[in-house]
Amino acid sequence: MTPEETVQAYYDALRAGEALAPFFVESPATVKVGISERLVGYAQIANALHEQTRTTEDWRVESHDLQVVERDGGAAVADAVSLSWYDAEAFAERSFETRWSGTLLPGDDGWAIAGMHVSAATDLDSGVDR
Image 1 (cartoon, rainbow, N blue to C red):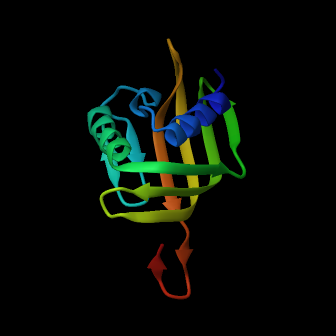
Image 2 (tube, rainbow, N blue to C red):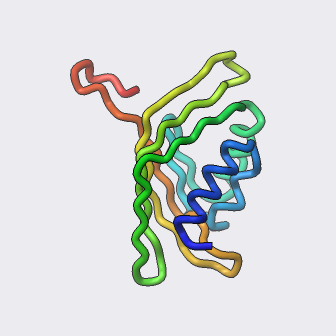
């Protein structure tokens, strides 16, 4: 798979409620920053993603501008993504317009995410992050 196909497969797995940890580099240096969390190390990421899959459902992931640049044995990715899901513990629908960026590294089994950052836009008028 190419880096772009890997990101698309990650989105597909998220929609389907499948395991997401296999998309990440198994390293203590791997980082995933989400809308409300910062996870460092594969073990912490794998545990958090397992919990996320267990407590959420009905994911909608709409990519609007996936950009991929391969260079020097790695890849950088960026995307604008409409993201929503049902939080089964809070009994609430969550929805965000998000920005994604990250790095992927090639491995024996294809490309894997070494770093991921997902953020939601800030309402500059109110000073509140959404």
